[in-house]
View 1 (tube, helix red, strand yellow):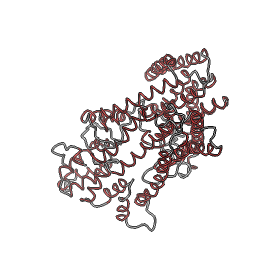
View 2: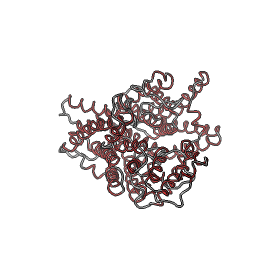
View 3: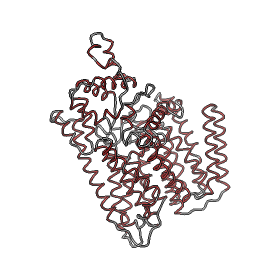
View 4: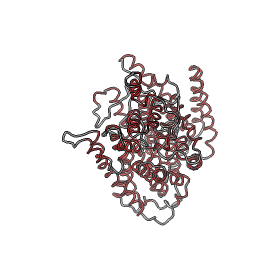
Length: 616
């Protein structure tokens, strides 16, 4: 902010940004059926507040419209509603995705347009928020693992995974990525404030929490922190050595948890997860199936939000048995849903943005140590998978080379460069996670990532101040829209969590189907609880765009049978058999009973393949 900005205004703006970064991952309260909906709405409202408070500090936002990141998000912004108009995607799903992507674009443009002084203040407030949420999440995870009975579900979420922490986001990989962000924020804050003695214990706490999460993605993120320590010559030697020591912190934390598990008899999930290897077979299988769908629909894809629909209703005899609503890889997901030309343009623009950001933050002198670090990491990982001793030796060699590289190169501090590098590491950490999952489909990850990318790709700010109207209006809309969504969601909550004096189920479902943002959730209840017939069939077709599961396939098939489409009923039953689900197997057990088999059309296979598009 400019020097003329009143102190109380600057403090309010910093507080708003702090809250936007800190609060969403800490919220534990939730209501069925969406476990993290309130976290996402809190993120949208928090970043809406940040847009309101920082609107007068973005003189260069118009120049940011030409950045590759802004163009990529603009291409993504039109995808959801295009599927609503031309592909039959329910408006409730299209509106939600459009709101989140649009908010991301707004946050990116504001961050790119900040003046130089405002960028430094904003970056520090942002990192303080990430650091605070990380420290409080460490406490949450310690309770979840060591004092699980104390997790009340309102302030501290209960872990549904034995021997593993999940944080209040209720997902181990999300927890691990949050710990990576908190680690990066800790580096930035301790360097800026000169609190170098505090960095090592902070990093140890966050690495220990990654071990509690049992997230293999988190282990890769720790390797990324070590590489950062090697290549970033703007950091102090002590900070670089602390980052390089994070793999050692991982080993110490692992050893400590193993000893505790052996002596206490409690489960330590990370040990069993490591034995599964680096890649889940089901994840590799879903990538294979997604590529098959991509090659079958190369130009326009299957449609935004329609991967699960297309994949579940396409014959794949060797499909993974879990019900996937995402390919767990950002490139694969965009390609299968948007088509190769559209997705290729988005991915190239995002890659261009990252490369441009790397040049602005690190410069060309970082390429040699970066290349050596990556090669040694790859060799160490490959050797560890086959020969643990050799992998450990290569890992030790990497650490030794990194320590020597740090010791021989002097540190040169630069506030702007340090800001860009920390922000870029935040982007790279979540990009790494996006190769094996889909964190950027959640507002509490997408919006901070867009803000960090905007700090890296700051536009040349003009001397004149920019109009504040767009950001104040957009910020107010995000806050008001989030509040409305909470009220709108209660229509659906009443279906799944009825009160003692609630109206009959059919009335609650009808009321939920009038929801603007969540009618697809009410459609699921209609499709699976109402008698098979035309109304249940129409609801099944709408809710299938959200997630197809065993129960929905069974009821959908019965509704097709009831309306006279026996071939469609048998085709859906064939798809259900491919999932090899116990509930489905029990249903098909009726086919072994002579009295039931003749009257159950699903016992016979379909005579041909039905195009999944005709089932919409």
